[in-house]
Image (cartoon, rainbow, N blue to C red; front, side, top):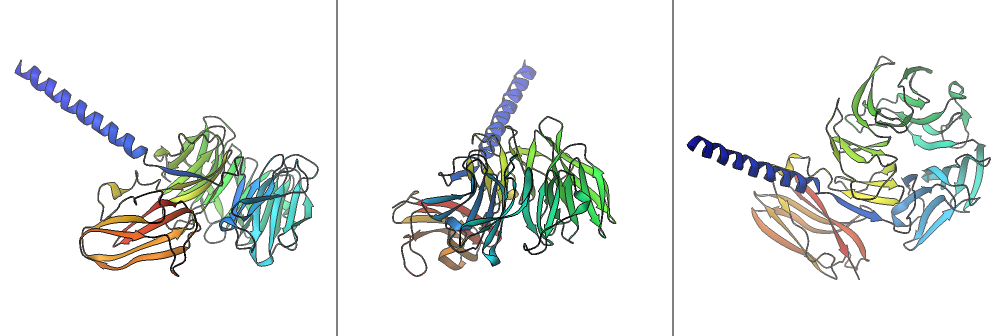
Length: 431
């Protein structure tokens, strides 16, 4: 009897612990912060790029909008989205700015006789055809120049003025190019990944169409990853293994349904899929652990990623229903949940007008930097920059910049650096 009571109590304790763990897991798994930006763009966004060309508002973002009434798009002011094209049925699939020469290269079309590579002059707002190319996939700039790929080859230009075919890839379906940290060129074409070695190309058959090549940031910029497949539960994200100018094999990172694009966030890869395949964090190792991060957003297709100019876990996602901003997505994955050197609380009130209070705690004496940034990543106001003893503190911000001028309505970020601790949170000023 005593033994049965003991076992019953033990089972109850285990059950309570299990429920607690599930609650914690659910809580942390929901610790995701998403905002849909640019609500005027409630349609597919095939590509996004930042530019410093004058006249492009809303933080210099360019958008490639595919399909009917699509084209090259950017804001000329906060409320005015301009879409530039030369045919209403000819959308843009990829863009890259040439900031120094005030122009934007655009890959237009998806199966018409007007498909091709175009140059857009921002000053005159006119297009000039560079080359007719059927079914373009991308135009991009890497350290060795500009590249344009379509279902029949690969073009290259060192400076954007003169373009020529890389004859080796004639009649090949070229879907992407990238360079690793030492400048080695990788090209995806058909079911093969190619590595350039002294002007020649060595290939390795993947067995699936390659949608994206991704090279990690320094110091891991020798790691090359592939998003492979066109739908199905045997699609993969792979790492390319290579040495001495030869591809030696592939490592399976994990299986996904229609992986389309890869990005990087902290120590993780971000994998965006099509056809409802989802959006995930995955460890960049063989059979790496996977965490879904896009559930509930209504996204069916992920087309592109772009950096976001504040040092914090964040990025922009171009999807079939517009643009999303992701922040603090790795909080549930980092060791900060087990040991925190400081704490940054949510500002109050939020939204606010005109003043809000930011509170934080410091467990040990350290240097503290608390600053306000706009959505472009530019510092608006430095609130605190001095050493603090351990304790709880609150600082108010009245919505003015360093010069004492009131800032406009919108999303702002406050960033705390306290010793080794760093955290960014979002607030909204409404006027």
